[in-house]
Amino acid sequence: MTSLFEPLTVGDLQLANRIWMAPLTRGRATREGVPTPMMATYYAQRAAAGLIISEATGISREGLGWPYAPGLWTDPQVEGWKPVLDAVHAAGGRMIAQLWHMGRLVHPDLGGGQPVSASATTAPHKAHTYDGKKPYVKARAATLEDVARIKEDYARATRHALAAGFDGVQLHAANGYLIDQFLRDGSNGRDDDYGGPVGSRIRLLREVTEALVAEAGAARTHVRLSPNGEVQGVNESDPLALFTAAAAALGELGVASLELREPGSQSTFLASDVDPISPAIRQVFSGALVLNSDYVRSSAEQRLAEGIADAISFGRPFLANPDLVERLRAGATLNAADVKTFYSQGPEGYLDYPTLQEQQAA
Figure 1: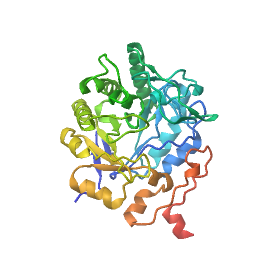
Figure 2: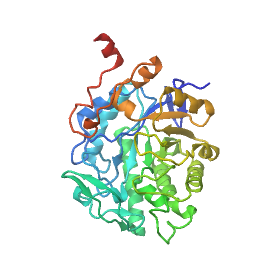
Figure 3: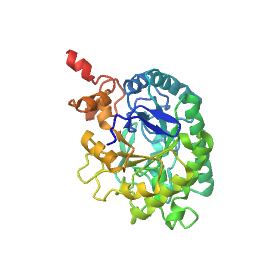
Figure 4: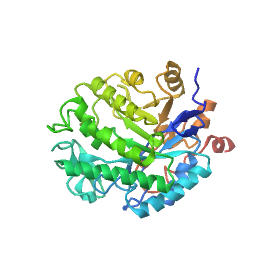
């Protein structure tokens, strides 16, 4: 039976184990999206993960709508990432950059102007801004010129990620953000080549992925999807048909891995009553398949044993347990995460979670 602690080859990366660190927004960069020194410490502390997927990282001012999140569209941002990657690599880790355009979930107060989306729609709930939460504004439907520009933004961010030292990139096509807004019929009402039937709605996903592959190579290109259930007001009437088609297209492009966020009805974050689609995706995608959401060691190893997953990505457990790999191996109790410090700007709740060794010594 395959173990979480067995090595894994994904694309051109030789990974020490199958315990990946999922992307986790933490809000510790500057207002200009430049990574800070504490981010190098944070990621290096977690370098024992088989692969670290960075927090979602903006590809442009237009596309980044989270306060104090990092970016990859300016030279200072690239320079800010370099010591982070140096620290991770010095600690023996591997790390890829998750590339993010939030689409209609960007508030104009963050400086990107009116948000763009597949169609002229308004997201539910409220946006995070530097002045607190505010209602979302109506997005405008992206023009074909916008689409061409956004694809180049993704390509530029990929070049910048490689220049900063990342071991690859992951396209964030999940969780109701821009690519997901194009994928799903609940948010995509277009009547051009990017809307309507499934084959057209997956077009932007395919073209952006092609742009990443052109810059990084397929062996260093990864994608994240969230195929089961509504996310941030974005829904799909036939998720099985849509996401198997999307996965098949990504498989044809030869991407190294596909990460699926598949929450259940009891999930502690964005729960869903829609059945997981990963078994069907496994049939059409031959690259590394990575599952995410609410896993513990026993359920993670069950997915590996079933042959559905090649690796499991852990989110909040890694947030509160920099030595998660060691704790899972030892069957040790995990630290509880402090929700109040998830998105604060200081080191508290970021750099100060104790390791198992430190707790035992105390």
